[in-house]
Image 1: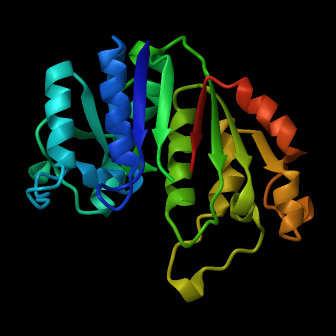
Image 2 (image 1 turned 120 degrees about the horizontal axis):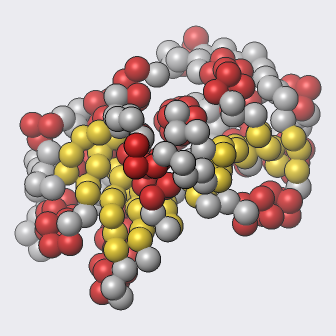
Length: 119
Length: 135
């Protein structure tokens, strides 16, 4: 099955990004495809390479970058939500790109299931 | 609209596919950004010619209340956008009966014409959707 994911909350404060990551990993292990992850609301904060958690904690941002590279997942950050929160091209972590909300709607159309992670 | 429309590159790969999209609005219009940013997604979905509906439950029913005045909180009053939805061919607006009643509201207090449903009916509608996104 082809999945699209949507993440609506920021890293570390909220479990949305962690749960989505676990979901993505499990789905890929079962042979499913994750074609895109769309970051919206405070979820755009998952995309900054300035993120530096303590060494004994998981690195939520780099974890997405790595998974995207391994499995060809499109990590899309909403432009309007990103600009409001100071997330710009120059601070994006590897594998993320900034684009419009059309990419979310397109994901809903193209994927078999769009799964939303948030409050 | 302009800043959010930035990413719509002609939806070629999706042309011809019409899915049922339902946007579930659960939050009060102010206090958090969910209602406003949710509305931005709804407007974009209209550009993709999808079968779009919106449902308002819990504090989400406050999004539709007439006479919103945000001057004192220094936040933009975006409620006029709900009146513009008709122009985007978004006319299926459903409101949860219980949520209205629990807040002492009636449809006369709302900005736009809506269909009032009970939670079982809303559940059935959700079951018929291809995509459900909640804010």
